[in-house]
Length: 309
Image 1: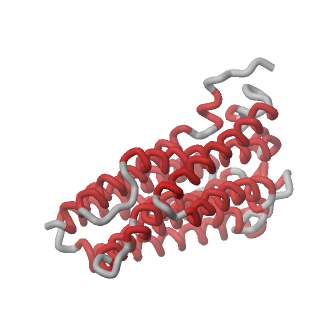
Image 2: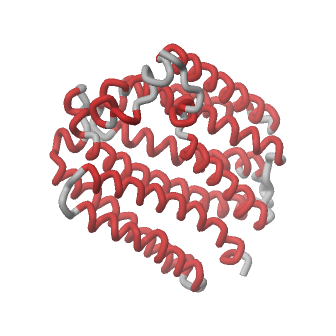
């Protein structure tokens, strides 16, 4: 089999890696820098944090595809990369290499801020991605929750490295207040990713049922799973409306942005999920949820106008 190098970009989900990069850059330069809070990383160290994050995430995508060859051959045969464009051996070698690079860079960044204990985060994330691909994804909801937690961690890790090491008696109130904003965005990423993972399971139910998976749609059926996904969607809508009422109501532009680009599309998703079930609909909803996550992260650009007004 002839290796197709460009397919490596597909294998590592380069668009998703760009999303991680964008989210981390926005937290640093659209939230932390304008607010003038005490941060721990200079520009080079922060770029290394981003590089460590995307290396480990890319490794996770590779090992997931290696373990998913049989399922993907049934669900989406035209998108299978392992053993069609790239050998499994090369894929596994890339997985090991990227993990080693990501963990090594994570150690470097932790050492630079004199907090070696934070290095363990990269080891834990790397190990979880492997265990997810090889075992956890087959378990009811556990795999979905693990992936959602890892996406949330890619956002939260900026606050952990930038804010927590710099907390003092004098600035702890400000540092923790800003960390709460980052936590809000991490939780938003968690819940949107969880909904999306459930929707993707609904789309992949045919292949998953033939390969021993125990996902929500396999155990409860598409209709009940759609109700669960809809319930989570409305939980998110209500939470965001409460956030608008308590935090953003004084800023017309921020409120309008959240209503138009996040809350409105989430209501649209809930309507779609309760309609006729088809793989085309599930794929469409999955893409809409990805856009909602992107627009959610882009809302960080509004905070310098909201908080400094």
